[in-house]
Amino acid sequence: MTNQQIAQIFYNIAEILEIQDDNPFRIRAYIRAGQTIENLTQQISDMQNLDELGELPGIGNAILEKIKEILRTGKAEFYEKLKQSEYAPLVELLAIPGMGPKHARLVYDRLRIKTIAQLEKAARNAKLRNLPGLGPRAEENILKGIAQAIKHKQRFPLAHIYPLAQEVLEQVKRIKQVKQASIAGSLRRMKETVADIDIVVSTDKPKPVSAAFIKIPQAINILAEGDTKSSIQIQGNIQVDLRAVKDESFGAALHYLTGSKAHNIRIRSIAQDRNLKVNEYGVFKGKKKVAGKTEEEVYSIFGLPLIAPELREDNGEIEAGLKNKLPKLIQTKDIRGDLHVHSDWSDGTRSIEQMAKYAQKIGYEYIAICDHSPYVGIANGLNEKRLAQQAKYIDKLNRNFKGFVILKGIEVDIRSDGKLDLPDAVLEKLDTVVASVHTKFGQSEKEMTKRIIKAIENLNVDIIAHPTGRLIGKRDPCLVDMDKVMDAALANHKALELNAYPQRLDLNDIHCRKAKEKGVKLVISTDAHKELDLDFMFFGVATARRGWLQQEDVLNTLHLKKFVRYFR
DNA sequence: GCCGTTTTCGGCCCGACTGTTTTCAGTCG
Image (tube, rainbow, N blue to C red):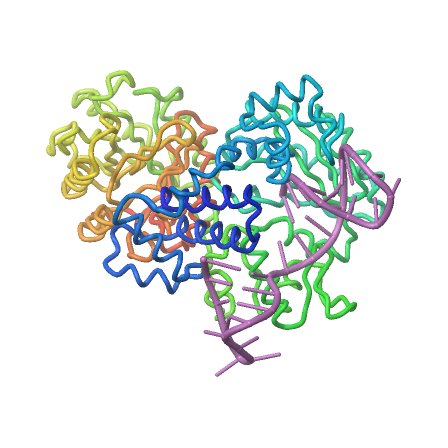
């Protein structure tokens, strides 16, 4: 049972309790416990002493007992009973935007509706408008919401949304009455997937800003329009929310809208302890505003330095901030090379020269060309002979570069038994050997862990690429004991890759943090198959920042000489 | 359900928009 699965049980409990109209604070307690569990760097199932969990925020006796029960029996009796309740099936309706627990209960109590299909039929037949609190518009919105729920179930990869958000932000900045504008929300926190785009602006005239916003060229649909808050949809049914405040409140609004929710709740309860109130307009002592113009100002009231958005998950950042022990996070400009770059020798679409030139242009000192090995036949993997030819070619190219080096590498396949796809005699001639799994993802945890560790123990291997093999929204991470893999990497002085490719981001933020705690070094690489893919580094670095990584935790921040020496 | 250097009971973050009413509940972030 993974942490994710345990957390999901608590989220499910919260949803059923919500429909049952239970105590909202009890509901929040379950959600909070779920979040805490999801963000743990250690698998609970591996823990020797489960009672330590009780020390964590939001995990008290009742939840601790349920965790123990889940680990012991695979389920929680309390949840199993809840699932039997009359109202449990109604959670399906909560997936519809605009449909909350109260209305779900209402349609069930009055019309016995418990599925989305039944709800849709009732809305089409105008059966909902006579219910108390609902009307014809509600029917319309429910139908729209159902269409949206079906179409837009998934969250979008960060790298997909980010450029769209920048375009919208540029448009918003052009609105005459806008003074300051910024992205907020999970996008600003650089979560690996985001559901929508949040923008906050400052202005003295919110009305015309709102009016101009809903008319920007990207808008294909207007979802809400108010004096200070408006929402539109852009291509791909992505929702963009705009919030307008006065300049003196910009910092408070930006902080509030950036979240996360858990982080905000913590800040606000700290405020309460000090007889202060925090909202999107500022920090208030009674009626007097004591901060709000900038985020720095808001944090400083609580004795905190500015906390980077990537850290704002109520995951220890507030405690670290109070002790002035926040990490100095890695930045994209710290990166000096990319160690996982493909070329047209295998399944890349550009020449080695094109990739190298672009890398030099964006300020790198080195790249490692790591094309596929023979086993990945579909990718035109390189055998020993072609690899030797490539090496000669790279030597020739290197004579034409100044202050930049193309390293000779390979992305060698780790076969299902842990053996590598090329002989040691071939690998030892290379500068950078990246090993990775591309087949038999369905192995048991024991097999997969053994397989990867065997590769780590090969003297010629430098880096394990995309260690879990997950593809966001497509393929789950393979079953692997990351603790053991990291311990092996540490013992053998090997690095693990944070693959920055948008669908991968593998290792993820939580793994990064665990690696840092253990002292395992990482590299951030893009797995680029064309020049512009090298720019995915930005998203890899963002994930590393979410994992609290600093420059010294990441090897490809080293200058070339030091980097080469490290692996020698 | 969690939590506590005021507390083991009684709190628990805060506000905008919508659609329905006619002062507000529900939903969302």
